[in-house]
Figure 1: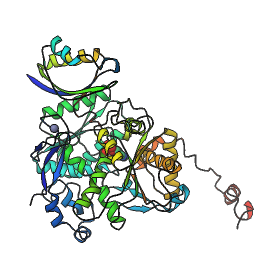
Figure 2 (figure 1 turned 90 degrees about the vertical axis):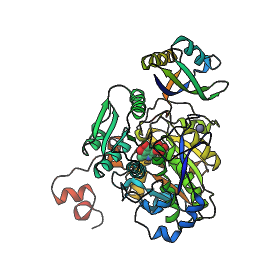
Figure 3 (figure 1 turned 180 degrees about the horizontal axis):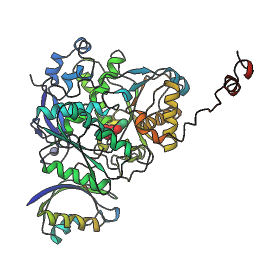
Figure 4 (figure 1 turned 90 degrees about the horizontal axis):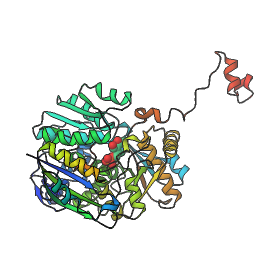
Length: 416
Length: 79
Ligand SMILES: Cc1ncc(COP(=O)(O)O)c(C=O)c1O
Ligand SMILES: [Zn+2]
């Protein structure tokens, strides 16, 4: 059996072979992978999944690769944390954190999409892979390409922070710093993808790449004991992650792993770059592109490729969207760290900030099973919180000084 | 001869002007619109421009001068 049926245009439904193409020749709409769900249904079962590898590849029957020669064999299957402290703080009975801050190997959910993209790119015969990125995506492509012995080009804007650049250089891809602003880099990369026969993970490999995000839905359902959550909160940049979680939930139903999907999707953005949330709140089915200005740089996509589809999926699910200020992003990062011991990057701060807002608004209710997707690690965006975490308490090297400072023991007057 | 695909957004006050027709006349390129959404205060087209690459770039500048915003067909790819 071939589980992949075709690539299909999301706009006009024209079908194409499962090659490295991403735009419909007819209408220029984006392509996505279409599967033989009837065939997959015969092959897949809860038992088979549970006996599969301890990674997202246990869902291989629903992923767009042909063989098992995986790039990124350890990606996914991250913890679903029952967040009792944060739940109690927010007033939620059953809150979970899907913790992709510990994804392998580069500590963000991008390891899922890149593992699928590079596995497929290699199957399609590519020896050189590439991406355009300001952060997490580039780190993940660089690391996976190194491990898979693929040639790698990473394109970045000229004004990136040193730490982000280093996170690529260490793996020794060709890091190409393009002079000019975001739009210049963007245009150049689209042109290079058109001209050179490379596997550009988020351009000509995008139909496969994006499917990797579905595993966040599959894992959540399995980890909840094969139940779908009532509410999920998802950070949005291009909007792809949100649309693919929606697709993943429905696929589980198509192939008989679950009976129904009643989950409400909630999209989260930062105020300084919220084209999708703004459109949703205004009741529009289209968004207006913006120039991003927020500390949540991993979500700073002003003209999001999947924005339209994210609006549609969220409306279908009867969900909501919200946005938070940069201050609320920092508060969200701190709140998650201090209640659950999880240090998230700014995207996680956006998710927690929006979760808090939606609970307050009564959109997410006390008794609803809620999952917040925390998609990247705080060690990567330390500059966002450096001024908000205080300083160590400084003391002289004496027991007396210590006990006095902390009001402990004989000299402090507190509990001995 | 090159064929490049773009997503072109019109400024609010020019949604009703025949901008694509105009650049097809002003520059030595062929325009081929594949998809469009034009409403009261917003409008975009997905269009292929065919011609010499330098002439296409001049046409893109022409579109920008008319207040249009031109993106690649994939929109933002720097993630
Ligand atoms: C940490 C993190 N979370 C979430 C996202 C959002 O992903 P998407 O572009 O699929 O909406 C990104 C994208 O770059 C990211 O880096
Ligand atoms: Zn089409």
